[in-house]
Length: 170
Image (cartoon, rainbow, N blue to C red; front, top):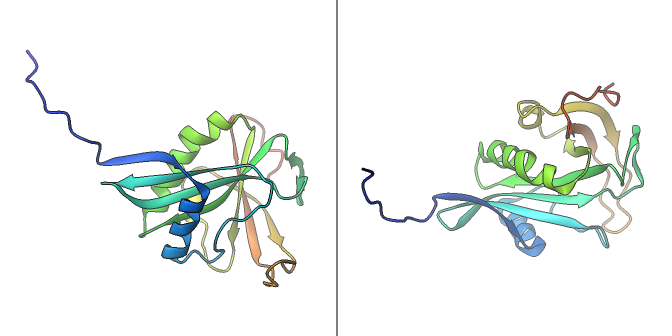
């Protein structure tokens, strides 16, 4: 016979949150790109919650341009962007990206996920260790709204079907 157990609340959850809430966490944790502001783009935000407090966020958004510059086969109809990934402390981005990739990405119905990563700040291990492939290097122009100088970025790809040929990898 199984002993009777007391129902307890989960210690950790990964749940949808409002974009404004996720952006607030980006600000608090000092994300270099700041808030995710995409105009009319559709998006989804999720937070890793530990004992009621957010410890990591993932913000998903539709592509800004019609296609990914260095891989024109990646476009708005088949590709979604993991636009922001940020955590309150080291190591939690790896947990959040895995949960996002395993549970959120497949539910969105896109063939591919991409993410841009600042090549000067990050070494790529978060994406690499999660099975993403680095497919291109990109340099964005000056942001017309903020005047910020563009960044040197790596483009990372994750296919919904990992057995699919890697036609976008250079």
